[in-house]
Image (tube, rainbow, N blue to C red; front, side, top):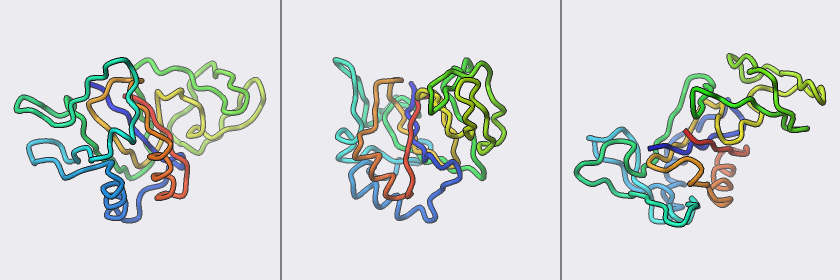
Length: 180
C-alpha cells in the first residue's frame, strides 16, 4: 500500500516544538490518538480526517482502523518523519525528469540532488532554480520534515486546501505533497 507525504516548501523547516504541531492537528481532527506499540510510531486518523483528505475514485477502499491481521502500511495512519538535513524522497526507482517552475520545460537529466539549495539552469528560459523548487508532479519531495498518511493508493488521496492552510499557518511556508 502506498502513502501520501506532505512537506513544507522550505526544505529546512522543522517544527520548533512538536507538541503545538500535534495539538493543532489533533484539535483540527486530522490525527487521533497514538497508535499501540505493536505498530510503528504514529497516530490513528482523527474524527475530521475524511474531510481533510479528498479521496478520488468511485469507491475508495480506506481502512481507518486496523484489524487483527493488519500490519503497518495496510491501514490508514499518520506518521511524522524528521531528518537532520533535507532528504530527497521519491515515488519509484524511475523518477520522472523534473520541470522548470516558470516555463514548465522538462529537464533533460536529473540535477545533482545532494544539496537542495543548488540552483540549476533551465535550458529553455535560463532561470536558475534551487533543486527543492523544481516541479516533480507529485512524485518527489525535498525536506527535513514529512507528514505521511499511510494506507492510501497513489493519486487517490489529495490533501484539502484547509489541511494545507493549517500546515502553512503552523510553519509560515507553503506545503506540497507527493505519493510514495
